[in-house]
Every structure is written in C-alpha cells, then in structure tokens.
Length: 338
Image (tube, rainbow, N blue to C red):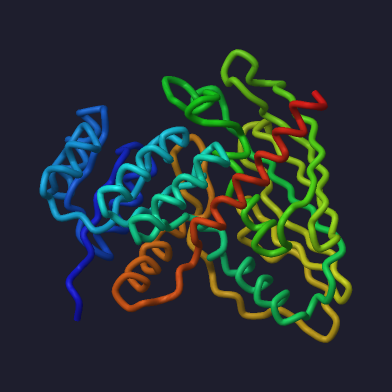
C-alpha cells in the first residue's frame, strides 16, 4: 500500500472546513494557509497541522506537501494555483477554476510546464440522476439532443454577502461563477460546448449589496446544433427553490430537478427507464443557506486514485476552462445588450 498523500489548504473559510474533513478521511493535512491568522490557526489546531499566513512561506517551509487545495476567493484562484504548481505541487482548485479565461489558460500552462496535475471540482457530476443521464446520453438512448433548459432559482440574502469578498467584482466575479458554475459545467459535460450566448441580466434586490447581477436569462446555441436556455436568480423568496436541467431529445425527455439537481423528476424515454438510483449526498448546509450537493468526498477519492493508482481524472483543468469560457460568453453578451 502506498503512503498517504500530503495535502495543504490555501484559504481557511467555510468551504475549507469541508475540504479538511475529506482530506482527513483520504490523506494527511500537513499545512493550512490564510491571511486571516485566526482562521488559519483554528483549522490547524483542529487537524494538528502547521498554520501559515502566506502561501510562499508555506511552500518554502519544507513541510511535506503533495497537493495544494485552493479554497481562496475566486479572484485569487489563478495566482495561488500557479504559485503552487511552480513550486512542484499538484493542485485541486475549488470552483470556478478562475474568473478570467486567460487566467485559466495560464494555470493550465503552469501545470503542463511543471508536469503536475491540476484538478477541477465539478461535484454535481456525481449526483446519481446526473450520472445516470450522462450514461444514458453516451449510450445514445436519447438520440440527438434538440434542446435543454437549465433553471437555477436560489436565495442569497444580504447576510450571505455581509463582511465578505462575495459580491465583489474582483474576487467573486458574478453570480454564475459563485452560485451556478457547477450547473454551467453540466451543460458542457452533458450537451456540449457553446457556440453563442445571448443574455440579459439585472440586479433587482441586491443593488447596494453586490457589484453585479442577481438575475439573468440566457439563450444558447451549442456547436452540435442544440439550443438551450438558462433562467437564473438568487431572488427566490426566503429559500432555495429549484435547480433543474430538462433535456429534450430525439428519443426521450428527461428532467433532473430538486433544489440541487438531486432528483429525477421526469422521464419518458423510448424503450428505456432509469431505475433504482442510489440516494445522493446531502446539500452543503451553511446555516442560513444551502449550496450544491456535498460530493467533495468523491473528489478526494478520485485524486487519491489518480495519484496513487493511475486512475482516470474525474474533472480536468480543460473542462474547468470550458465552464469559464461559457460564463464569459454570457457576460460578454449581457454587457453588450444591457
């Protein structure tokens, strides 16, 4: 049996707590880093590892590190990942890979130059109904995909953004980056790459709170000829309402729904029926709000399999780039039209 993999965490905020838990179950957490000394010290004390307040100092310390998990604000993902890759470490990057297409390219180049892995987190791919529909499409059971409808109706109240980098253009980037990038990834993963996007966005309920949109409607044209729509908001009153993907194909129609793409709500498929789906993980619960399905356990299991056993990567950096490209096309269109 090979030695356990040594992990370090950059960014000790809310999502880092979940990362630390799964690192503990799948490897060794040897170091944590955050400019907020209290956060770094608290996490280090909990898991018996060393705390740092600067990524360069951590990487130069001599502490054993195989993989750096980047959990810092979105706008810092690129610089932190590139720094770790150039120090000869593999990197797992939280979503989104970056908030700039060029930055994604620089991250991929750094991984290639240093012959290191750059893992992207695409956790909704592990939701049982999502995995089942992906397999269904790969087997050709839906035939040609005609159109898709993605719906993301969540709630993010003012408290979510208070005293936080969230909501800022430079560190957050936009609602599609922080709230719904996992949903955009599924459009690419299940349907294909996007040729054109036409978007309208607005900020209705968060005008003095965030620096970008809280609502958007988007029309998409895919390279394979399929058409799509995205209807998203963080203004669902009081709580999350729905996160769904409906696919209309030549041989069937399928809807994955629930609040987090966690339920198979509808299926009518020629000569086939999806049955006996396992129960998925619960959603990430942050007290006043919930996030996507909590599938980080499967992400870390995959990292260990890739690095220890030569397994196949579940989500690579190129796929992380494609998500950012699609979001960029949407925002570019919105800036021209609005």
